Length: 339
Length: 115
Image (tube, rainbow over all chains, first blue to last red; front, side):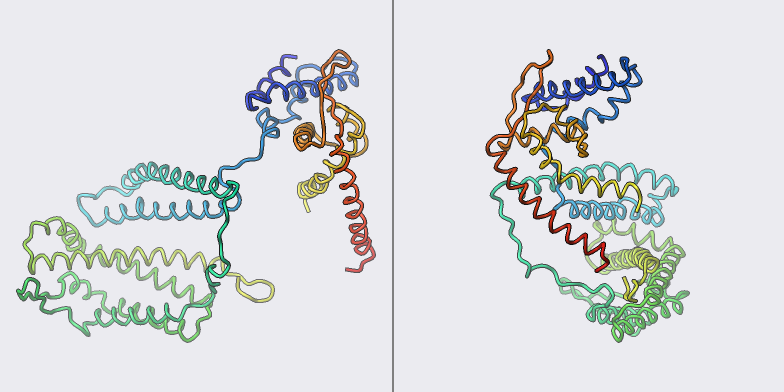
């Protein structure tokens, strides 16, 4: 009887105190009745391995006890998809902030310079604490929402008219295509020097001439042709999107290729001018001691240029990955409609 | 379809019948183990992890009563239907008969190849 007593004791651990004795009494009676019937069939008492197998068939003690408890959940089926979405979003943000950004900065800032392995190890360590904190906050937030929503008397307010419009993932929005063409053209004009950045600025009533960044001028030199072609390719793809908004697989691939080449070019461009890039990034710290004037504006200009290029490079990488995933997953259903 | 998939659907199908079968069997007073055995002998096997919580839920709903009594020198908990339980059972039987008739019609159509 030792194993059975131990089993009942383990079940009892999980039962509510007010009903424990009653439930265990009934469960004990059932187990013993069934055991007696089996032993009557065997014509002898069950041996230990047989008793073990007999109890295993009944399930784990916690599982047996759970059947007597009311069904409860921390985050119910209504909120669970939103909870998973929030966790995924937090995960992606954390990945970008805690891993990609330190890696990028370690490449361009000498005082942060370290091997990739060291950077990733340190980033992972700090990322872990942040990830745990975010996981806890998101879980608690949704658990509270579940509790509030499940209370009797809580009225669910929702209006079908306020649901977001259906987005057709296979059509490019006209406004997006136009915006891409406009910004692409502006960047192209700046790139080819069609309008100059030189000009006078009059802060505090004192005229200051702000010239184009030397970094910008040196970047344009060797990569002028290839980057011009890239910008034109981007504008051309946006124009096709405007004329034919229905997305095609080959255009997804073309966009991914343009993004990949852009990221590689900007990255190699900045690396080729590593010293100027590092000077521009480091320069921000000393700017607070610099008197307002041309020097300060120039420092901000150079720093801003490097940051913009870094953001474009990182954005291109992310965009390329998203488009590649879409390209790989692209398939049609039996009717020929794209899924 | 894999064996697991079939088992899951089979359990789903049987799950809905257990409450009705238990209420019908408790027209006569029984204790848990004999109830389980009786159901199994009649083709509706229910494991104790399902049966006992169900008996408690039905008792909490006022459809059953129970009392502990000593029988064969062992304490046993005996269940039987209440008046409300009998009333609900009769309604469930009508509901079951109606469902059965409808389902029989659907299955007959399928077997005759109408779909």
